[in-house]
Amino acid sequence: MSVTVRFAPSPTGRLHVGNIRTALLNWLFARQSGGAFWLRLDDTDTQRSTEEFAEGIRRDLEWLGLRWSREERQSLRTDRYVAAAELLKARGRLYSCYESEDELDRKRKRQLARGLPPIYDRAGLKLTDTERAALEAEGRKPHWRFRLANSDADLAPLPTIVSWNDLIRGDQTVDVGSLSDPVVIRADGSFLYTFTSVVDDAEFGVTHVIRGEDHVTNTGVQVQLFEALGKEQPAFGHHSLLIGADGHALSKRLGALSIESLREAGIEPLALASYTALIGTSDPIEPQPNLDALAGRFAFSKISTGPARFDPEELKALNARLLHVTPYAAVAGRLEEMGIGGGAAFWDTVRGNLSVLEDAASWWQVIGGELAPQIEDRELTDKAAALLPAEPWDDTTWDTWVAALKTASGRKGRALFHPLRLALTGREDGPELKQLLPLIGRSRTEARLLGRAA
Image (cartoon, rainbow, N blue to C red; front, side):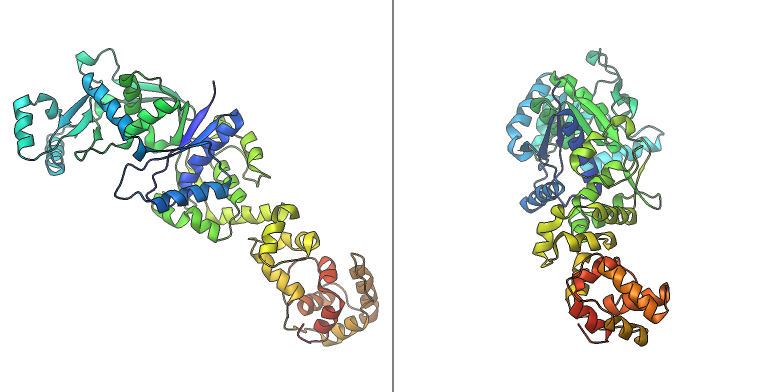
């Protein structure tokens, strides 16, 4: 079977780490299976959906390297939803209702007061044509509910209990007999996600639906929608949701973890992809060399049903680890855009001390910019300046120079190396001085040792 999956965000805001985890799991599965990954913009909410947000979604996915082979927009498919709705009306599975939100709320409260579950009482089914006409004469417009197959004998043999073998959670059941018939068409004629998603998945041949566990109950309803439409249902997989490092729900803080904000903070796309795909799995959280390597590790059996813990500090640490092993060729263009030269020699020298790529600029300044001298031991640095060998310098220069300085000064260990580091870099720590020295060059080294800005 050819695999087809989809990522279906609503363009009502920016993508955040929770969205991207879902997108990644779909993309990685499709990549591993040689299947197709589609982008579907669920933009039926015309009040909040914007083209700016849609473009932001595309930009975030492209930045992460998650290419899609097809894009669809629900706002362009209204005719298909109308056709599906008319089919369900003809089959007696959609019925009109006229209650306002206030009336429905009062019904629920009365049921709760009587110790009954707040399930819709199907009053709309009991209306006569005359009663419907009278309600519409009052100016009321109907919303439409999907009639679940539960206790009604006329809808047998569909069971009250909907079950499926979840790709991640194993055997799952939803008792649709305990649910209200869901509204699938609003009074203004707009369609809701529960309905449109099924129509799209059926018509586009989606084979696997991978999404958050907050959709498990939706799946019970949607299985019956597939059956009512006479369509084959896809396989479902429901991953756990993210929690924070403190163990509390992350949902209310996701706005601060938008992909845009993480990008601006210097997080590498591959670090974010590696982290969000591997948290909540049995695999160790390690930087991956590319997305294909990440896809090669993907397996539904590795995804835990327990909460996935997202820790921004852990992501930052992983980002640093990724940069420490990133080859020069992968960042050469970006370094050039930042005005940083030095080639592979510079990159190999400083990458082990970077948290984000932008940190390289400060080390480029240390090497080639003006630096205020920090002289801790004047006697030592004067001797060091006097003993500097002639250029050209290479990776042997440091050892030769330091050996002579040890003999001349009688110093060793921290007493030798700390004053040199302060004078040459102005910092307490950093890359190996052996590698930095040829990059700084003789004239700058001499000036800094003698306490002159250089």
